[in-house]
Image 1 (tube, helix red, strand yellow):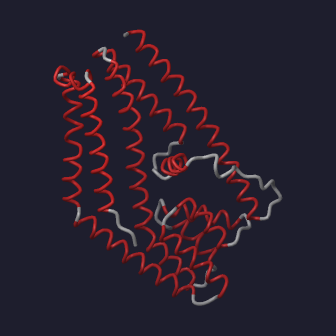
Image 2 (spheres, helix red, strand yellow):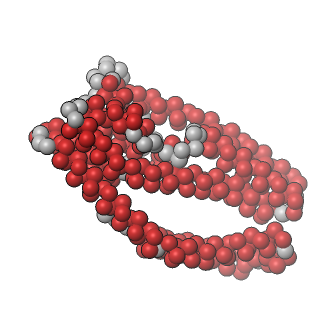
Image 3 (spheres, one colour):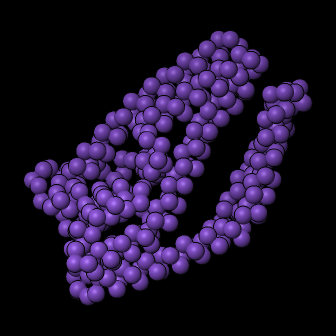
Length: 305
């Protein structure tokens, strides 16, 4: 058993080094792609070659976005390294504690899932911060335009004086405008970073204004009122369903937590599950039902507007 554990630990270490190097290379290629895209939109004569769309999977793209927008001041490569380090430490620690290979596998899973859950939680919090700051930003843009500033100056003003973290995104947009991009193109580029529906409405509003003209101040004020109303609706919905969501989380996590407790404290009580085909079948059915229940609840609580 000691040889098997050693092989597992060596495999995890090699995998950690490989994935860390891959994440660093992917980040560099992503930076080159963004530089070429920004240079192409601003008219600078650089190569227009970009990374093919099929190279990166949707999960990799979501993971990089979640890490960047989590507010943790970390890189995707660093998060992957932390995940694999935690998997190595927990897996080896549980194995040398009980000398059971399935506990090492459990430690590896926990080491990967826990940092991932932290990133997902902070990414969601960061997203809510941006969403809640949008009405204030649109009101400030409208006020700046009413005071006689151009749209470029209004965006730069909010980037300097607005509430963070949304002000950082507007500062990025203002930087693109200073490089020569138009307001609509700069906002579209920023929209790929923000990825909020209500920010896309701002992009559409500015694009319509640049093509047909009109009262930009009135459009921005109406957009701010609309976003504020939606935020209030989402807040009321979250408050009304808070108890139901808490109960669902408690019920859904009870069985895995009890299984983990008995596996660590009283392993003889759960050894039958891991030593027979019937036990593995019961665990597999339970896991499937847990996933079905989580997806079902998530679909019920999901709101589209």
